[in-house]
Amino acid sequence: MRGMIVSRLSRRAFLAATASVAFAVALGSAPSRADEQNSDQAEWPQSYEASPHMAVGREATPILSPATVDATQAAIQKYQDLVDHGGWNTVPGGAELRIGSKSKAVEALRERLVASGDLDPVAGAGPVFDSFVEAAVKRFQARNGLSQTGVVGGETLTELNVPAAARLQQLQTNIVRLKAYSGDLGERFVVANIPAASVETVENGVVYSHHAAGVGKIDRQSPIMQTKATEINFNPFWTVPPSLIKKDLIPKMKADPKYLADEKIRVFNAKGEEVPPSSINWNTDEATHFKYRQDQGEDLNSLGFVRVNIPNPYGVYMHDTPSKGIFGDDFRFVSSGCVRVQDVRDYVAWLLKDNPGWGRDQIDEVIRSGQRLDVKLTTPVNVYWIYITAWATPDGVVQFRPDVYQRDGAGPGPIASAVPTQPMAIPQE
Image (cartoon, rainbow, N blue to C red):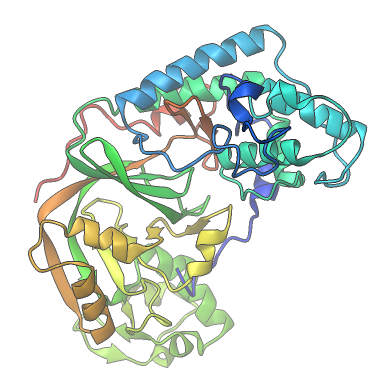
């Protein structure tokens, strides 16, 4: 949330600090050169986009589905076979590898990408980083939630060098979590996968939309839970949770007495009367006895224009954000526990599908008006916040994400903390 202390930990720093944790790889059948070639071409297409069978597109199969469980189980067997045969080699560090690079490190990179199914063996060996290698690197990055630059830098290199045995263990851990959601999840539901920092909406067994998300920081984790979306708040007021008063507002006011005024945050006593910040002793816990509310306006309000209420005991919700730039980052663990949703207007339009008179035009109009308006969903929608760091899809692609909350460790404690209690009731209206 804007105005709060935001962790600047980069994904690269996180990965370097947790090198023993599994992060990413995929196995799939290697396509033949004959399948790839066009009759008018003398060689493979030279662009990533021109190799559709190697590209990793948006998946239509929900992450919570029997098909995902089956595909993940198949991937476990493939990884077990790979581990039994010695796994894969490591890629030496050094200068970034990109188109035109020529070195023994590129030879090692080729071998590594072939082993994980990202590079077709018919692309050949050798020390030159060509367009085939670039396409394979992009595929690998896509499966690891990294920007598809086609360049092997620090973050990509770290993930390339996670051992195959660690990848296998990660899959084995997450198949347990996936199976925990094997029941009836509803005809329409929402999944927020925290390690992937992503949201997907599902309708009739098919993914309707994908949304990048901003989720809880490492020290302010988004909870694992099942709930329902019940109400949309347009142009909402933002009320500061008590935990953030201690963690953020008090330290900021001690450092800068004008902070609340600059952020247009007002202070109210128990009677609902506004009080001046200067009347509060910020060197004590006195500030925790007041309520705080930020004025409306996208540039001011940390919630942006929309908040989606999802009743839960953690005081978290899903919302818009004025900080749209976070959605282009690889590392989106930036909130105090809530989930920020990219393209939130499309998301809200889907949630309000059963509400007469609430299409995208009406949503845009009420946001433009600045009017405070609460709309209850005619049909509440099931919402699942999950923790899945490894899964496979029916097309043979295996996805991995960082175990940013360190819940993939050995023993029942960390794993159990990411699996919902069965059965876990959905809160009723």
